[in-house]
Length: 185
Image 1 (cartoon, helix red, strand yellow):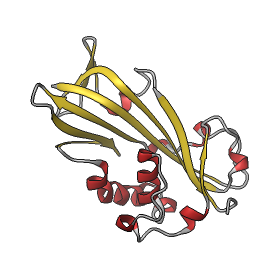
Image 2: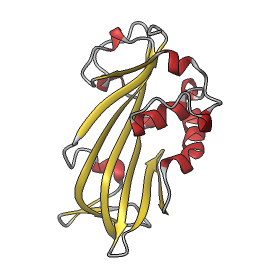
Image 3: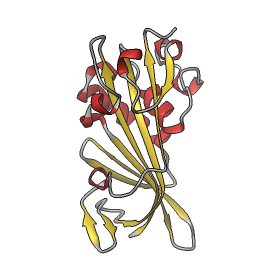
Image 4: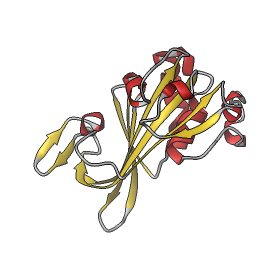
């Protein structure tokens, strides 16, 4: 059991020309990624936690970038429309930066950089459609402990089964939207 901090929720979706409402209403829940960091005792050894597609991963001294190919492969199986853009969309949402020109992800289709946008979660998607998008959020101080083997979270004596179920248990410090729209060149 170690202290969990910097809890990120990365939620993704796709909007067609006729999509309505805001970004939150257009999220595809099966694509959600939950990421956190943990620190062990006074050694301050850092851990990376990932919950995606029903699987929990705990690694010491790791990062999202080191695990991105595994996530992208599962994205391709969960929703084929994301296969071309998944890597740059995930990394851009997590770091809040346009990754489409980075050499490390150079195989990415340039469609992303041409239509890159930032928005608010409550913006009307019709202003951006058609588009791929991600809604990101972070909570820095969670005040919980996580089991490094099982991913169970303990909050004031209550057990929460996984990082997905933890969503909503703490307030978000920040929320943002990034995406790529073929209408925004």
